Image (cartoon, rainbow, N blue to C red; front, side):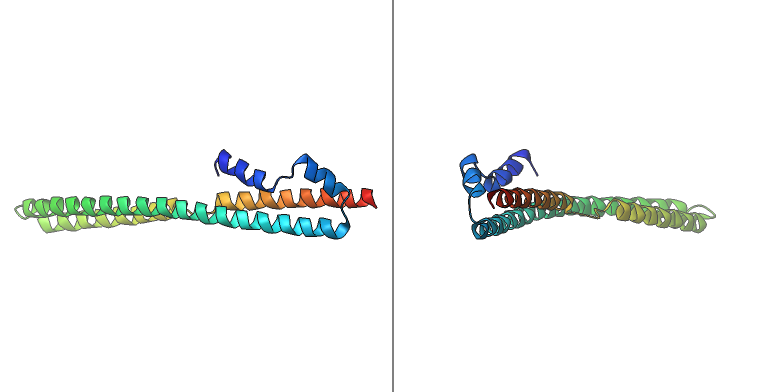
Length: 156
């Protein structure tokens, strides 16, 4: 989340000092209603931010997958042309077929290693920033609730 989005989110749920003073003397029912309204607004804002972040991450992942696929197809075309040229060259040697089989084995090992690396490099948790935002929001809700409970205790 960029700082401007974080500031926008916190400013939407923050109370100005006048509202805070008026809540210190408000009845308990009104405080609970306000807390629920604040929580509902916070959840709505966070869901909107999570959707936006997910769209952005998916769009980036989609572009990376397209570019990677194109690179892979072009590399396969190159290897195919190179292998064809090599097999034609090896056909003139006495053990050319054996050498071509060894080359195929090397390609197989390289493809297994590349697949393993691709699996290891694939993102495991795309929504890490959303999770951090939700944890922060839960802490903020707890703080607001504690402040309002404190205000209720002092007004009673």
